[in-house]
Length: 523
Image (cartoon, rainbow, N blue to C red; front, side, top):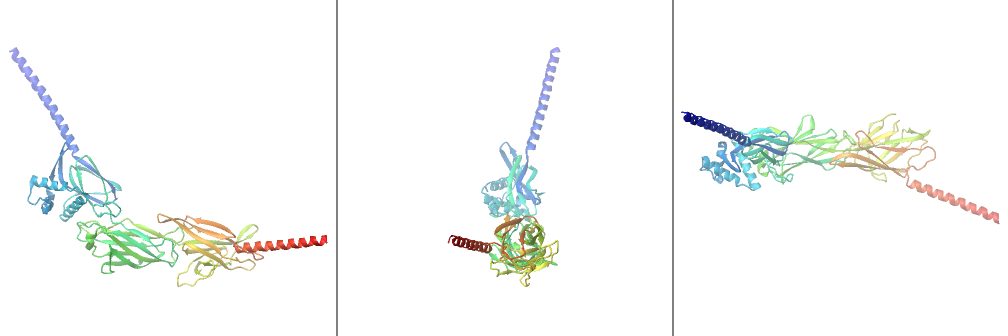
């Protein structure tokens, strides 16, 4: 009896130990299972994204990973794609056989171009069949898609374009991404429609006509039945829109009204829209350049110096295949043109102080012989505190002589960069007129198409003086003195030569007279 009790007790101990061991095993298995499940989701990090765009992704295959082995199961939502075309080799298959064959086809597309074509085909079918995906909004530089169940995914960047060579990268709005690791990093190389705007001359004068060029590219239109593509441009008040001179897609010139349409905003003819009609017809020309050229004339409202006369251009394009008539705008591209100025300060010295001299007349020329006049018109007469303002005249305006007011100052504005000659044409009684013109050179400095400063170099009394401006509403000033009494040359050059010759002649006469006087004494 006692032996039996010991045996039962021993058996119970063994059973309890077994239960405990089994419990520990279950705990270990549960922990391992949880660990496995945690590892069966991944995060995709996409570099080089653009803020505010839509990223949609679709799971094409689910994946189960064991060690390094991965098994893929086709998402039933995409069965129709693989059975729709004989080239995929799946038309007569179903179930596990279909999954295996479909994945074999996808995995065999290893070349970049072939893989890109497959992604496009899959995207077109997905959009046409309105399959559900997960959409997130992209952020600046980097976008993440988290907690993705392991599998093979189709990623689509709505509105991006799928072409080579725009920026040297391969642009792919549709990408096939395999997620079988906790973290996956890819570099987005998609391009969204943008406009590149240039002007044939940034340094201009009032009355000049400049040509603007707008350049973009035909975007990828996969999944679209129609597509909106418009250039929108707004010119500043200092520019007057002229007209469109050219619109091309690739090498094909387009015809107004039938292939493109120009509209101007009511009440603001400087706000223009150039829409390419039936744009979907260029679907097979993705990546081809789109070029628009138009002219504008710098007018009397143009601001001067560091103040820019700007135009802002964008492209408006479709971003949603389900609603292609609604467009989104690209990042604006702004181009500036500039006109320049300088101020003349006319003065005389009184009690060792500069005193302004009024009533002095000037005219401006582009040649040293002062034949080709730069005609100007008066904008304001000035007073004892402010300069008189004269702007470059338009072609139909007669020029006038610029006259200094009580402040002695004249601002010449609306000028192009280049060389000018300032000639004094009227001088008040009792003061000497400059005997020659003052040479003036205006030189702007641009960095990355932005004006950083401009210099005004002038030659006066044999001295070269450089004044510059890098601030808005700061006019470089040329200092010009008038002297009273006997007329003296004030601009250097020939005047200095005359004085030198006269001095030498006088010295020679004195020496001759001295020598003769000594000779007489000795005789």
